Amino acid sequence: MVSKIRLMGRSLLIGAVPLFCLTLSVCVLLIFSLGLMPLVYRSSVMSIVNSTFAEKSAYINLAVAAAILFIISMSYSALKTGSDRYMLKKAQKVSAGTKDIFFYFAPKNLFSLLFISFRTSVLRVLVFAFLNIPTVLCSLLLLTLSRSRFSAAVGAVLAAGCAVFFISSFWFYFRLTSSLFLVRYYFIKGEYINFRHLIASSQSAMHGKVNELCKLRLSFLGWFISCIFILPIGYVWGYYKQTMAAWANEIMKLQ
Image (tube, rainbow, N blue to C red; front, side, top):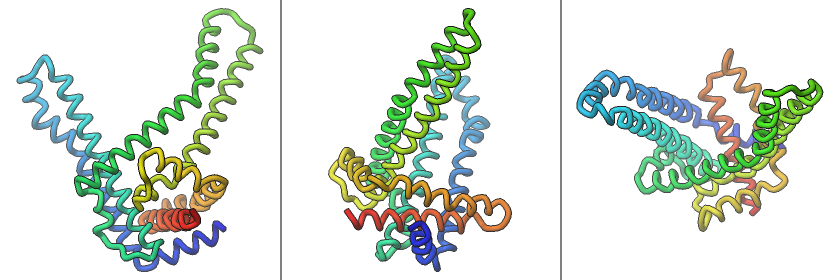
């Protein structure tokens, strides 16, 4: 199955490699350019802020830093989701062009993307925090006991317990978040009523397919390692993203 999906992604990649490489280059250059904003602010504006608003300068500088980080994240998310939109439309055999890559830079589309991305991120953080409660409690117990005398055996058991809890929480987090794989693709298609329906649709479609997703991702490990020595990252990135879009489309067609 993995070989079939990868072959499908490779066939869809034909003729689109230059565009994928250009998109990746634009993404890197955009992030790099936005990353220079703190230097520009520090060299030209920060001194004025510090002298004019001495008492509140720390808060203003913090707000500016947060705004710059938000702009960088927003731009990256818009380009990434736009690329997914382009690749999904190719998998659907629908006409796709560069306008799809920059589709989410339109204010209305960007607002919808930010709303979904924010809620999805909050959900992931809450799941991660909840799953790590046993790890935190075990670590706190170990830290508390370390301030008094206790046997090495007890310490070893608690340390082993912390490790087991951490590995278990990471594994369950991976499984749960993998079930959200189709969220961005359902969002791109617009086939959802609200955020809850979007999550439920993804989890329902991904039921029993998490292991397959893991195998598909791991099959690209060698390709990404080869980018260091042989293949251009633009081709491998496009190949990976197009394959994921093709697989997502196949799953959604079954629903």
